[in-house]
Every structure is written in structure tokens, then in C-alpha cells.
Amino acid sequence: MITFDEVTKSYPSARGGEPTIAVDKLSLEAPTGKITVLVGPSGCGKTTSLRMVNRMTDPTSGTIAIDGQDIMSTDAATLRRGIGYVIQHAGLFPHRTVVDNVATVPLLLGWSKDKARSRAREVLELVGLPGAYADRYPAQLSGGQQQRVGVARALAADPPVMLMDEPFSAVDPVVRDQLQDEFLRLQDELGKTIVFVTHDIDEAIKMGDQVAVLRVGGVLAQVATPEYLLAHPIDDFVADFVGRDRGYRSLSFQPSPQLPLREEVVVPMGAEPDAVRAATNDPWVLVVDDEARPQGWVEPQRIQAAIEPSMLHRGGTVARADGPLRAMLDAALSSPSRRGVVVDDKGRLLGSVRAHEVLAAIEATDRPEADPDDVAPTEDRSA
Ligand SMILES: Nc1ncnc2c1ncn2[C@@H]1O[C@H](COP(=O)(O)OP(=O)(O)OP(=O)(O)O)[C@@H](O)[C@H]1O
Image 1 (cartoon, rainbow, N blue to C red):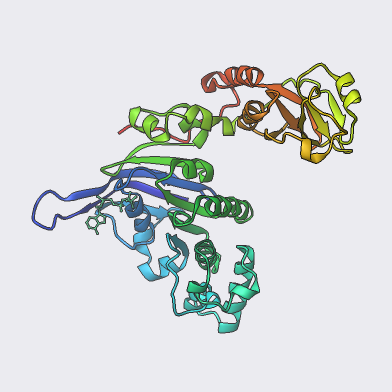
Image 2 (image 1 turned 90 degrees about the vertical axis):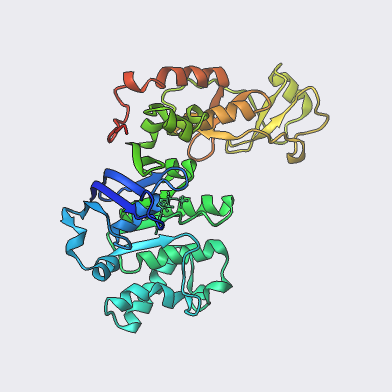
């Protein structure tokens, strides 16, 4: 666990004016094996808070401890070797190969070159960069690949603690999404204690086991689980920051328990028009393959020949029965029949839902204070 206790950082003014308070009496616990995200507008002290953990900068007052030990009791270089650090644009050494970049900390720790390089190849594999990339130079990689190398370098010596400063911000949204997913999968296995800085609330909500929202002036506004933050922003600043669409965002966390599914009339691929029209009076009918997996919709009154893939209206996402309510709502709203298709974990049809049914389920579950299963806040603090 990383503990910030009343940590303040102020920078003296260059011209003898008021000092800048970058971080103001920050008290926060980053639990072991979890991701704690620091989020907030530009200049709110996120990076400064992070850099105090590995002593890139020292607090003006207050203490930071890792597993109860004050970080000031360890010399800065030793402390840093035990903490993985990932920054935006990866910060790789341009004149070293990928494998040597990743081997940096193991070498500093005194490992032999062979052992350090073989470990480096192992972690590169772990972050999805197989052998062929190891001997390239950073400039020969895409932005997303460079970020993977950055993550691999931070993981190389297997530190229990990782600090990540906007690690995925410099890549396009699709690659970012992919890197986030892969990192979360990796973290499931590795269980590092992570402090993660971002200015992007969506990233914070996706990545964080807990999210700390900071306001300019370096004051902690609220720290809570993402679910709790979305449901109960402590004040207008946090509410504005997490966004007006927070109700919709919060659906990502709500599983769809016992949502009654309607039976959906289906026709097989290859069905003849008469058979399709005999099956239903509905303007839309769902077509399935021979394993009952939904393929798309057709309009019975319009088809002139046996159903083939080119006739299918494929609009509409399908939702997994064990997925979140947000996916159910998306499925209902995006379906041409307005019936959202719900499938099992093998993609086989279970039934359908309508948007109003999903909304009723939301109404029933979107009452965190009344719901005994609600995740309690980790902590609330007002400024
Ligand atoms: N070395 C420094 N000297 C003087 N002021 C500094 C220094 N480093 C940071 N600051 C100031 O401290 C405040 C917090 O900066 P910090 O970089 O921690 O914010 P941030 O939330 O990470 O911002 P961003 O999202 O823009 O990176 C800012 O007002 C910044 O100008």
C-alpha cells in the first residue's frame, strides 16, 4: 500500500510572488494490488503527486510511505529501481535497442547481461511484442508499440509498485483502447500496486479500482470506486468533471440481473419467403445460423428469395446475458426491430429485450443507497 499523509508540494515563485501550491495536503491510500487513478484538469497536481512517490521530486511537507516505510528513509536511486515508471511517449532511450531498453533496470540491479536480456525478451512477449521487435530501435516502432516497450521496461525487474503517467495518451483512441484492455488483463495476473495518472475521465473509470479526483490547487475532491463516483459525485466540480452523461457511463458497471427475456421468433439462414412470412406477422424477424447464433434481421414482407447473408440487416449490437445493462440498452436501441438481441457466452440466442424493459431494470437498480450489493465508497473527502 502507498500512503500519502498530508502531502504538500509548493514551488517558490520565480519573482518573489506567491508560491505555487501544486499539491495541497493530499491524504490518500493506494491499496496493494490495485490501480488507483489520479484524475483532474490540467495543472491540478497529478504528475507532481506521482513523481513524489519515486522521489523525482520531494514533498515540501507530509509523508509518503510504501507498506508503512517512509520513502525518505531509502535513497532515491534505490527506491526508483524498485518502482516501475511509465510515462507518455514511453521515454525510451533512442540509441538503445528495444531489448536493451527493457533490460535497463535489471542491469542497474546488477543482473548479468544474458539474464537481463532473456528477462527483457520474456516481458516483451508478455506485452505482445514477440522476438522480432527486440532488436529494433524505438524509432522503428509505432507509437502503440513504443508504449508497450515502456510498459515492458517498467515491468522488467518485477517491481511491486508501478507509477504510470498518462501512459496511453499519445496514441490514437483505437490503439489506446487496445492497450488499456491488454494492460488490465496483464494486471489481473500481476496484481501490481499502481498509481495511474490521466486527465481523461473515461480512462480513469475504465482503469481504476479507485479514482481520486483532484481540483486545481492540488486539493483532493473525492476518492471512491468508479461506480460510486458516478452515482454520488460529492459536489458540482466532481459532477461536472465526471460529466453530464455519467448516468449512461455508470451503466457499464451494472450487471443485468434476471432481466426477463422475451422469446424471439427466428428463421434459419436459407429460409424461403413463404416460410418466413408464415413464421411471423412482425415487420422484422431475426435470422440465425444452424447453431442458433443471430446473424441479422430481415423484413418478411420484403424478401423475394431464400435468405442469404447479403439480405441481412446487420445493424444492432448483441448483448451478452451476463454483461452490463449498458450493452443491453445499446442492443435494444440499435436494433432495427427495437428488440435487443441477447446471447449466451457462445453467442447463441437467449431472447430479446426492449429498451423500456432495460430502463425499468435500471430504475430498479440505480439506487445505490438502497441497494445492499452496492459497492461502498473507499473514502469521501470534501475540500
Ligand atoms: N518544477 C516546477 N516549478 C514550478 N511550478 C511547477 C513545477 N512543476 C509543476 N509546477 C506547477 O504545479 C502545478 C501542478 O503541476 P502538475 O504537472 O503536477 O499538474 P498536472 O495535473 O499533472 O497537469 P497536466 O495534466 O497538465 O500534466 C501546476 O500549476 C504547475 O505549473
